[in-house]
Image 1 (cartoon, rainbow, N blue to C red):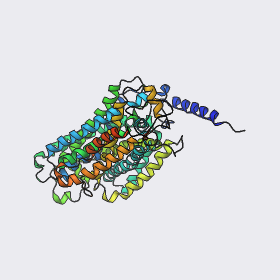
Image 2: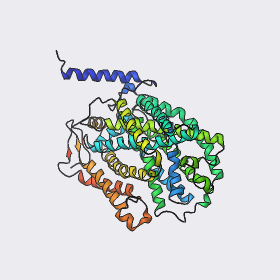
Image 3: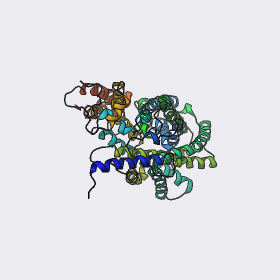
Image 4: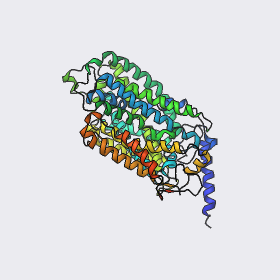
Length: 488
């Protein structure tokens, strides 16, 4: 006799709720929750824990390299570089903090929360992009930097170092939420102490006045600000993934404050140290033989150099634990066409495998496309943030009950949002991109403005979304009856 589907579904939901409740704050247990809302009985944790969750992942060489890029590659003067780095990082950090507040309110991941703006199917655009960016792109970048650090420290074959790094970070992501939070907590003091000590020595040996910016690339200031924004804002599509287990009564200002502080302080600190490391005098005969990581630690005494290399490897693993975990959640949130109960841990393993192959292929020329990668991230995240923040503003009067129903309603459509996001991205790149491989129309005529594609994309997406929401047929009212703000 076949059990009716209507009987099986409530039973399955009850079983999942029981698994989630049993998960609690256990660390060495694979998280049973995927993208479904975390029930009230399973909520735990305090917002202060978000400080180290968002500090540790940025204590790595990829962060420092944003500063190296500004001074050592774009040729910006040290102090203008500091200003550009702080500006771009601040904008990204504030955006990140604000988005995470939806986690405790609805118990869902950031990409599921995005259904409020994009609709159930339209949300596949940002969710798919984030799965690729986080689970494969960032995973490859950080795996390479961590592998090089281990290779320099231990002398092991580079490929072996890559596999060691990959296994550790994919394992952390497969365990899930509690293990990731705990890993970031215990790496936080180690990474902080090592990098503060390294910073003191690098600053003592740096020569900020030698970086005058006299031969800076056109638009170097705004290129640096865009890269710094892209790096910090690269975390924004993850925000609620790490706040959704907090109790619903958690103060929203605390939920926003600690992630923003963690991202801003860690990114600005290490980016500035990276910029300072580019002013350290290294003889040409030696510099030509050093890797990017080797140049960064050149002025450090042997024991501190070894500790810094170890910290770089740990930092890369800490960052990629988040990248793989959130990338897998984003993939599951793509929507229709995927199994309703797709196993998050299995997706994390698959993304990790693909990211490893990409990292393997990039071992021989790592770092050459890093600037472009950061800017490309900002190209789609800028418009995505524009649509997302506009939806938050328009729906501010909607009750949490109505919003919660909207996020789970598979019939809700808002095609205005993905169209606005895609058009904002395309127009921003076409007009304002300023990369080695492509220069936009405006940037070509005025190279001094740098790369403003992310800012232009943000603005265009907001304006287009406001206009398109009123076009008949683009928005379909959900069957739940939850109000859709700003339509009509």
